[in-house]
Length: 79
Image (tube, rainbow, N blue to C red; front, side, top):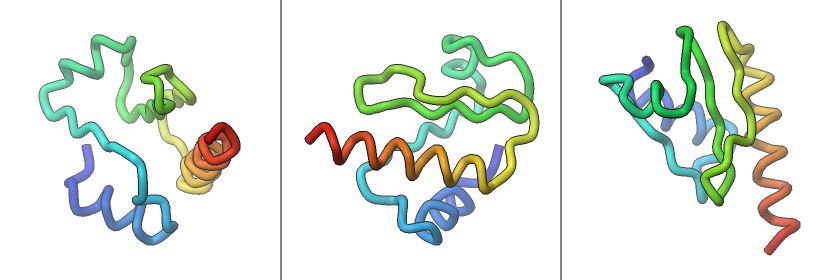
């Protein structure tokens, strides 16, 4: 996976660092527990711990950004 600093920089660049928790699972324990199968794989969880998006294989940066923005919008609408 990416270093923590790379993930934080990515979120900060797009203004998405507020209110998001990032799991850095270097031993793949969590990854396996949520059905992770291939690398790279992106799993985005909602505030209740449910899987919001699950992308297998290479996921374009624009898709991740769109998913995070959509999740933040949904969270804001439900507050």
